[in-house]
Structure formats: structure tokens, C-alpha cells
Length: 363
Image 1 (tube, helix red, strand yellow):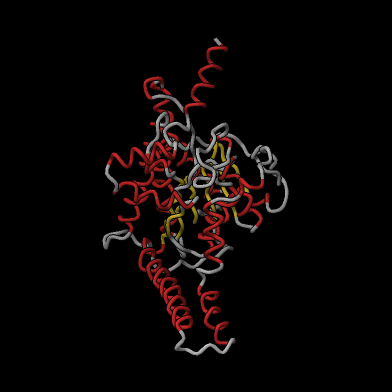
Image 2 (tube, rainbow, N blue to C red):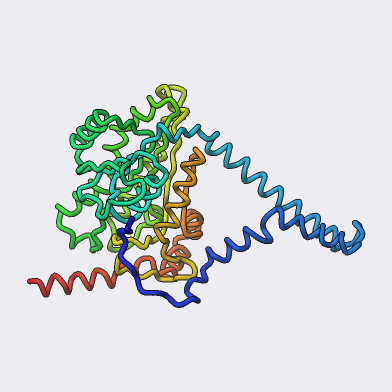
């Protein structure tokens, strides 16, 4: 299938070296338990005695790395529970905003697996041909309208589609100072970016609860939902609302009074940095080493892998997005310095100014 993402100019090779890449290499080498235990084994092959300081250091290092890996696995199990059983002959994926960007990539991945996919969008996906595309069903739907979502749910039932995996990906972006935003755009942004998630959860969650093997809910928020950013008030407010919605629904499903089937629902919160999708076209990352632009294919692979494992969790790419919560423990003066150094509040200035010039020319 052809990708819906427009080609971008090739970047220099050195720009591919990022903090995420370095950490990935370390996790696969010296921070991996298998590699850590190779060190003392190698030293023993050189006839170094167990009492030698190098051997003792190597043993301590290997034990610490192994213990950390075991504790991380235990923490993951305690935090998110056991995985749900996946039956791919019965799974059905519902994706809002699946006609382009990250959603389109995920649609193609599931289609190639032969999984039924229902795309809910106001624009139909282009180039819907190729392997597995016969499993993709498009429903023209404004997910900001609860009646429209409910109508699609009834049509899906008539088509023999029974949702088990729900993606809330619908999003729009209106970069602008708050006082320059017309009230209509404020309302549209909040409805598309936040209210739509309420609508789909209210409509499809009962169907997921009724599924024999439960279901999975994926909410695409943003690291900006935790940070906020200048010239993106409506977008960041909606993304913060999605994080709160995810946490609240997850807490409700964990209550003793939760409806039947709640224990089989898995929830995944995705809080990425800037994505290389048309939604963020023209926006340059302030720091490519610390905050590289996330390729949709890479993020989609991680999300789909987590779903296939039947697990809950939070996915944050790049690495800084998973550490951003620590920013809140700093004094505000240091937070302000960190925001200035990261360039988060100036990232949209160029886009806002360019669009203002384009509007002025149009007038």
C-alpha cells in the first residue's frame, strides 16, 4: 500500500545520532543481562580467579543489571496486570482519524495481519489497495458528534464487525495565540481532540466489555499534554484532558463495582513528542539530539507490539517524553530555564508567523 505521508528531504547521517539511538544501543549491549554475564565468563576463560577484584566487580555488575531487569518486569506486571488473551480471528480494530498520519500506518499494519479494521474519519483513505486491504472498512463519521458515532456502531454491527480494539487518534492542530483564535476554532479543536474520545468510549466500551476476550483501548495524547506550549492552548488542553480521561476510565474499570468484563480491558496511553506527520508539517524540532522527530512507523510498531502482547501501559517516544514528569518536581525558576533551553515555547513561532503572512496575502 502506498503511504499517506509525504516524502521529506534526506537528512545528514550525523543527524540520525540521537539520545534515543545511544540508549537503544546500550540496552542491547552493556545494559543487557546476557551481555553483562558474558563479562565474568570471559574473565574466567582467562583463568582469572573468583577472588580477583575484576571478577568481583564483574559479578556485582552482572547481578545488578539482572536484578534491575527482574524488578522492571515485576513492576510492569504489578502496574498493568496480566496480558489478555488475543484471538486474531475475532479481533476487530476501530480507528478514529485512520485515513492519514499515524492512523493510516496502523491501519496498514493490521490489514496486513488480516485483522478487520474499521476506519472512522471525515476523509476516506487514499490508495486503499494491496495486501489485506479487503479487511478495511471505511465509515464516514464526524467522531465529534455522538449521534454519528452511535450510527456507525449500529452499521458495524449490521456488517458483522464486533469491536475489540479502539484507537482514539482523531486530532487537528490550530497553531495560534489564544486571543487570535476565533471562538469557532476553539470549539472545533476541543471537540475533535477531546470530546471525540468521550464519544467513542461511551459508544464502544460496552461492546469491548461484552467481548469474550475483553478489549484494548489506545489513547493518543501528547507530551505537550503534560507540558503545555505557547500558541497551542486548545491542542495541549485537549491532550491533557485525554490523559485525565484515560486515567479516570482506567481507575473506574479497576473498582470492585466495575461492570462485568472490566478485568479483561487493557488500556494504553501514548504520549509521544513531535510526529513526522502532516499534522506537524513545517514545525522544526528545537533539538534533534535530545528531542528527535518521531517517525510514525516506529511509533506504530511499538503500539501494535504492545497490543499483540495483550498488555496495558504507557508509551512515550522519544526518551525525553517518558522523563518529562520529573520536570514538575523542579522549582518553577528551573522549569522556566528548562523550557527555554528546550525551546518548547518557541517551536510554533515560525509556523504562526508564516500562516499570518499567508492570510495577509490572501486578503
